[in-house]
Amino acid sequence: MSTFPRWSTLQAAVYLCSTSFGIGKSATMLSVSIAAAHMVLLPALAVGSLAVAGAPLLFLKKSQAKWDSATMKITQEFWSRAEPEVFVEAIEYWGGMKKLNDN
Image (cartoon, rainbow, N blue to C red; front, top):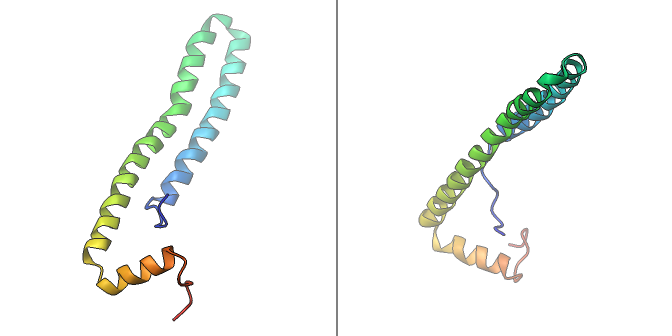
């Protein structure tokens, strides 16, 4: 596991998760209400509800792949431009030879 932060759009992740759960709750209630009146529509409603609730999670999954790519690109760019002193500090910190606030 990397000690570097992961790049992501927190706002997008929160929005997609909360939207998926909210839509799932609404779709469930709608399906139950309609199924009570028209039992024949139950299979179609179940599939439709899953599709509607799962769409934001699919977007989240695709976004995570893009975030992984951006994380790797930013990390590689950082290390390609880092001064030698940064490497020494990082190795000392990761090796436990130095604490974060030591000078």
